[in-house]
Amino acid sequence: MLYEKLVELYESLEKTPSRLKKVEEISGFLKSTGTDDLPMVTLLARGTIFPEYSEEQIGIADRTIIKVLASSTGFPEAEVMKLHKQVGDFGLVSEELMKKKKQFTLGKKSLSVRHVFDNLQKLASMEGSGSQESKIGLVKELIIHTSPKESKYIVRTILDQMRIGVASGVMRDSIARAFLPCETDEEFRKSVDAVEWAWFMRSDYSEISVVARERGLPGLKTIKPRIGSPIQPLLGEKSPSLEEALSSFDSCAIEFKYDGMRTQIHKRGDKILLFTRRLENVTDAFPDIVRLVKECVRAEECIIEGEALGIGRNGMPLPFQKLSQRIHRKYDIHEMANNVPAQVNLFDVLMFEGKPMFDIPFRERRKILESMIKVRPGRFQLAEQLVTKDIKAAEKFYDRSLKAGQEGVMVKNMDSIYQPGRRVAGGMLKVKPIMETLDLVITGAQWGTGKRATWFGSFILSCRDRDRFLECGMMGTGIKEKKGDDETDVTFDELTKLLKPYVKSEKENVAMIKPKIVVEVAYEEIQKSPNYSSGYALRFPRLVRMRTEEKGPEDCDTLERVGYLYKMQKNKANSG
Image (cartoon, rainbow, N blue to C red):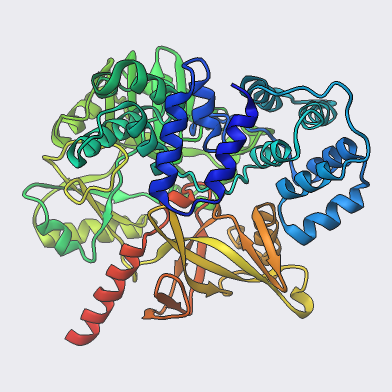
């Protein structure tokens, strides 16, 4: 398939606001794609070249793209930067400069999807001395052979800035409509459920699209867990009180809610892999956990879940930000492991000796987990647990969790099965002691004034409504001007540098930002407001902590959740 055909799809999707229309266009395109090209097209249609869980990254920054575009088009770097400041999109910059290109390339050729895909994947493997020059050469070789529109989308793919609105749910529905029965609403729902199940198991639509085409519904339904492919984790709903959580289930287990890194551990023999809640492969960053798994897990092949904490010299948990310093570290890994040793608290088993555990009740899964773990107190252990329906016993356990430096408790239904990738009120509920915070995504920022003129000084917060992000407040507090004694402090300078690569456009002193960075936010109250697209406004929101390592934009709190908290707050006020 020629790449220009995919670009035609991109152009149409970018102009199409309707989610249903996007699904219709993508499903038709997938159906017309040959089987050899289908895995690549499925990934590229979302603007990616690797599955969600892959740790591989293209690794090209704005500065490098500026050099590529200057050398590819003959325009000076200053001209490239000037144009980017005007339009806020390197894809549009590339398209415009290619239209004005001073020197036309001899021997211009049509690019295939495979050629573009393979070259972009090669970028991720280029490391070490001279790698930047090699990357520049490879991207330049692509761009000089493209049309202006093709160059726009190649650049956007490289920078992960596609702007065509193809979220995970859109691709899920598109695969269902392309290859599975969808004549009636019931057929469509069953087909979507089958694709979603496969996604929860593998998180790789390039593989799922081929299975859907070649093996249909039966093939998708038989997809099993696989060592090395992280499973979308079971998620818990929030409960307003411990008493309400206890009353939700006939039989309850209460566990510490650890303030750490959710860790999915895959083991086959001596091969150990570690994945985060966001399916990032962090195996290399945690050699101490790998060693503990080898020494303490009695199973040849299994997938188990727990929470990893950083532990201080006094045995108390360190703030998550301390542990997060280890997640993306490539150098001095063993030194960091000594400075911030990890403790693993295990709470579930998803596969044991090759057999999936999803349909087994939690009470049985816990027994299996207990039987397969050689506990090493303080380093590799089972999550603290109390089985009770007694509120007084539960409150004592809850207080003990807080005194141990944890966030609160999880109340789990002993009879529940494991449902990957879903928030299931019938499975587990989380209880925290303070007014419920919200995990929101930053979608805009306003430049500061005076001594803050070089930083973003306030930040637009948004909640999620399906595939859209709706504004619900402006945050300017909880962020420091200078780093204090507390290493978990977040400064305006740090947050500005983190957000700059995701700036989509700027108008006057406001930048619109691609939804990537998730923050935990506290507030005084939620008010109704016509000024924000969500219809709600947070009063005096303040930063509690960064959530980027644990959560992506698809994990932020929903409009429904904001509305629920608004009603709860209103009911509480009326009852008082």
